[in-house]
Length: 291
Image (cartoon, rainbow, N blue to C red; front, side, top):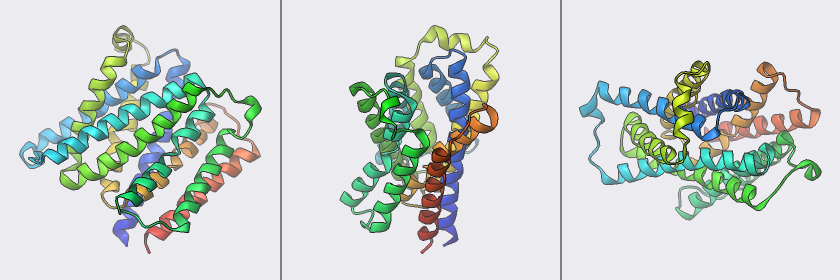
């Protein structure tokens, strides 16, 4: 029982850190930095953290299983796809559309879990997903169709971000069951960095090193990858993919609170209602996990 709670708690804590990362990325984007360059630095700093961890006990962390490397690489592709498609969706439509579509991920995860026989279909699970999605729609204002810019690219990229999210959940879950968390993260983030190197503007990436925003990039990488993904990979070993994907939905709540507390954003009553709905749903899922 305690182990199940620990798994849910670690995934939730990772999601809180991701929400804070969203706020830091928002600050950097408002200062003119390209989203892909921001993601690249998040990945590079994370990779350095994980690789350093692996080097401490290299022989113990070495894994001979081919399946482990395939799953870890797929997890890296999932993280890269998730970050990149999410930003493309924001640029092509709006943050409300992007967030709502990306958080369709639990539906994909639950469907795949049913097909693979990893989860049993229950009304509670479907109700939890519905609760989280309604909460996100209220929090992001996606219900206000008149103020939304929706186009085919924005919708396609948002759904691709959700599918990528599902891929990285399954990749991390399977890889971490075959090898140590530090080895899983090192391989995944190496793949992530290679993919984003292809898409990033190298001149702008080099400019980061001599800019006044280097501290923000460092904080982004340590909080948004180094600490959060270590918590996530340890947590997901102790819970199921579907529960992990639902519990990680506290991320938009944290990002919104970060905006209110540090960036001077204001929340309406409807947004607060959405936030409460997400938190209540996630709490119910967490409590039921122990049964």
